[in-house]
Length: 78
Image 1 (cartoon, helix red, strand yellow):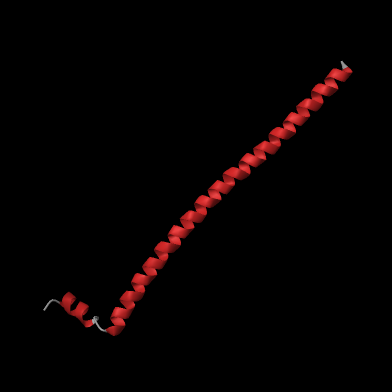
Image 2 (tube, rainbow, N blue to C red):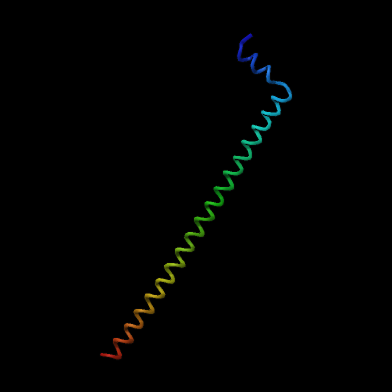
C-alpha cells in the first residue's frame, strides 16, 4: 500500500471530513467576500467619477461668474 494513499484513508473519519467541509465552506465564503468587495470597489469608482464631475461643474460655474464679472466691470470702466 502506498504511504500517501494510507495517509488519505486514515483521515476519512468524521473529524477529517468535517475539516474538509469547513475548508470548502471557507473557500466559498472568501469567494463571496471577494465578489462583494469587487462590487463595492466598482460602486466607489462610479461615485468618484460623479464627485469629480460635480467638482468640475462648480469650478466651471465659478470661472464663468468671474469672467462675467470681469466683462461687466470692463464695460463700465471703459
